[in-house]
Image (cartoon, rainbow, N blue to C red):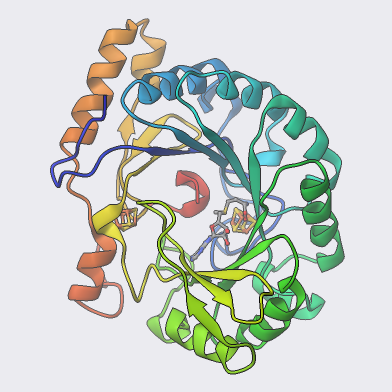
Length: 340
Ligand code: SAM
Ligand code: SF4
Ligand code: SF4
């Protein structure tokens, strides 16, 4: 039975952050100035155990959640993740179990993740050009290593593989056509993501957002595209197909075209806080409840209470109000903490 929030939206998807650590330092997500050697990451004891994550997921599945996504930070840094995948894949009602990763450790893990029951992966890749990728990620990474992870995922059956590219004006917008060309005619679907004002450390400015419409026009001027119908209610990407039959692309226009009206997603941070919006300023602590010996019924009632009180529609309000983030507003939680 679905629980509805105060705006009538059901709860269908849960994003689970399994760690706040990462082996990259993308400037738009974990800038080194804020996430350098002095940063205090969560201590082991603060992290939810796999059993605790599975318990929350089970309680939410009973309330209508059918899709789970493991994320972070970099989820493949959490030791023994395959065991968690196995536990989550066996929960009744879970139809789709996905993982979002930067791909650095994927080639070595794709087969074991698939064997544990993972359905598919999304890999983040912001450019095929090494210097541009370095500018985006502030990490020396060979694009070929991420491409090898993508290939391994496809070969292991973690398909269809999606590839996410965040576009920042003046940094990697010059890579849009090259990325489109590379993934045309391949089995992966490339999705372009507008640079979002998540967190409070990335120095986001509206001028750096390349609107989806502009990305679309750039690609369509080279390879004509047509819009595809919405595949599933709650899908965040607008899909387009190449008229020459070379597959499709997606646009995630969270800044220019907010999709709060259909947002059916909750997020669980690695330390057990439930967030009902990516742009929330605080979350609901579930860890204390889980560790207090509360029975299942109490946990379910708490989750139902949190979701039914939900009224978040940050992106819709942002575009209705001002174009830049308000100075002096309380800090929003970081994406690496809440789970992207
Ligand atoms: N480390 C994994 C990865 O990079 O795929 C998973 C976590 S990451 C926070 C999840 C997704 O959020 C990535 O695709 C990343 O590009 C995206 N992301 C992070 N910060 C963003 C921002 N400010 N705007 C748009 N997307 C962002
Ligand atoms: Fe790490 Fe992913 Fe954030 Fe990049 S986007 S810093 S890979 S968590
Ligand atoms: Fe959902 Fe919040 Fe994003 Fe709107 S801003 S789509 S409510 S996560």
